[in-house]
Amino acid sequence: MTDQTLIILGASGDLTARLLLPGLGALLTAGHVPGLTLIGAATDDWDDARWRQRVHDSFGEAGPAAVDVAGRARWITADVTHTDDLRRLLGEARGPAVIFFALPPAVTAKACEALLGVELPPGTRLVLEKPFGTGSAAAAELNALLTRLVPEERVHRVDHFLGKSTVLNILGLRFANRIFEPVLDATHVESVEIVFDENLALEGRAGYYDKAGALADMIQSHLLQILALLTMEAPFTLAAAEFRDRKADVLRATRLWDDPATSSLRARYTAGDLDGRKLPDYADEPGVDPSRGTETLAEIVLAVDTWRWAGVPFRLRSGKAVGDSRKEAVITFKRPPRVPDGLRGCDQQDRLRIGFGPDHLALDFNINGPGDPFELDPVTLGADFGQGDLPAYGEVLRGVFADDPTLSVRADTAEQCWRIVEPVIDAWHSGAVPLREYPAGSSGPTLPLPL
Ligand SMILES: O=P(O)(O)OC[C@H]1O[C@@H](O)[C@H](O)[C@@H](O)[C@@H]1O
Image 1 (cartoon, rainbow, N blue to C red):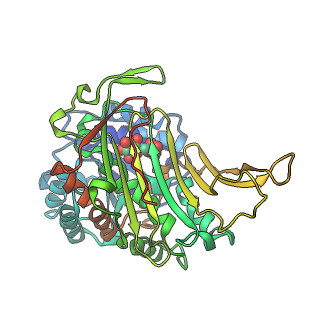
Image 2: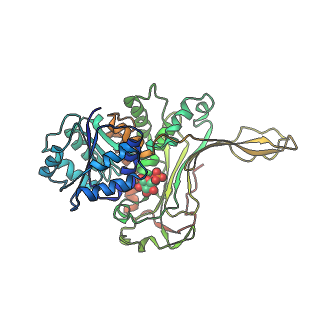
């Protein structure tokens, strides 16, 4: 049993309570990370009892190992952008420290600078949440700073979508079967969509979301990771270096399809009804600064300029407060070269659909149903993906504590993901693409695909 200490910087915030602690609770309950000490730190004047209560509440129904960690958790009031405070915090660590920056990007950068003045215990790992920086230049600057602190393998840029069992299942689906991989290319595929439209609206997260918006919150991070898994070449092994190299190869080849005016869309929800809930106009949500023009729905069309994918449009889209929740990657195949005269009714294109909630795999194709054998009907073969042992956040944290960076986003990849969306951000800032509106509960606007 090796002692480790998790130090959460910004521990009083929403991210810690909503995602990090529940993931940690599940990980501990499943018997991982024995010997963990948990320290929460922020400027808030909390004490151990208040922090323990927060940890306990966020862990939910947890097993004895998690309850034990919660019961021993410690709170340290500290300004995490001050070297002396950070030194004091690290002085409390037992065994290697895992420092989790649950902070906005600008504060994370300041905390990293302050850490330069502290001697880090051997084995220290740094864990950062998205958005990683605010653009490719800021991400590169932060990366340069991080490598002065610890080696790249000890920097974990967390993207919890890489811990979702459905997302990881893309690897098994593509590379452990003979039948799909040969047709996943520009010869056979017409288009690919990666969509994450949610019923959820702002849900009180203005402090974070109003500065991020849908493009940075979902597309620049999570959906580009899914695109990488869908388009990468087969790695020889799933060892961290190789897996991350293959992802990086394909992201380097990815660019906006055309001009941002035709290849991007931004929109914001207005008042509406969603599942019986009355939602206010986004601009009237508490904490929102309407003059920022933050988008709650973003869509971009990308090209992946590799031999395999050149010419296939990839639509990436995510919206909040959308009526029809739709969370899936859909690969639409080209029509057959010719359907013999006499076969009727097969106008549906074949589709492979990978659902990220509900977790589901479906293949839509044409076959003759009951009755006339020459009259074709659409059918669907479906399979439910197995649930992961751990929730997505627990899965990525498992890698962090095991010192395995496979599921972490590498420095160059984080920068590439900004490079891909930067022409869109610039065009939006310059006003070249108008901010559209959609009533909450509607399906929101969409772009025509360049087919
Ligand atoms: O479905 P999940 O796993 O909660 O992921 C979706 C969420 O992912 C988060 O990273 C985004 O900040 C949220 O806006 C989004 O709702």
